[in-house]
Amino acid sequence: MWSWTSHGLLIPQRAWLSMCEHDFSQPPHHYNLHIQPVHGGIDYHNYHIRYLGTGEAQHRWVVVDAPSGITRSYRVYSFSKKLFIREAIDSASCLLVTDITNDVGDPGIWLALVEHIPLALRDLYHHTSFSQNKTTRRK
Image 1 (cartoon, rainbow, N blue to C red):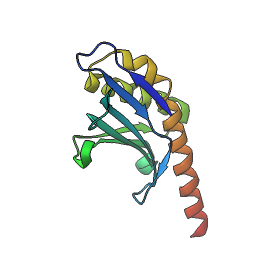
Image 2: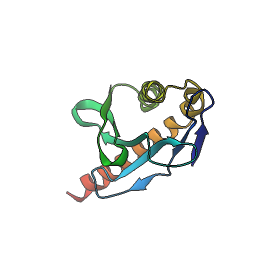
Image 3: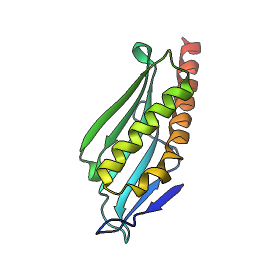
């Protein structure tokens, strides 16, 4: 688990990235990135990060910000399947971290988060690719 504490905000915030989780949504594997007050309380942001697979010759990650179960934003990061997966992950992670930095309002989170988001995106890619290949073999 990764965590970060803000230093440049009027109300200090804490961010933490969960371990890979599994639920009944499709695809089932996802990560949650929580942004909340340092001393606890309701999340300001709760990003649910999933890899949707390679439909329409695109690598697609979806990020839903849904603190308290209310969707605030729904972002899709799509990249051509012609790119090597490493390039797609690097591009998606830079865009995602920039969007999160803008949401949070403290540029200090960028450098801390940009090292960890690519690992989560790569892990989701592998989980989903393995699941899709397993399903294809069963048919």
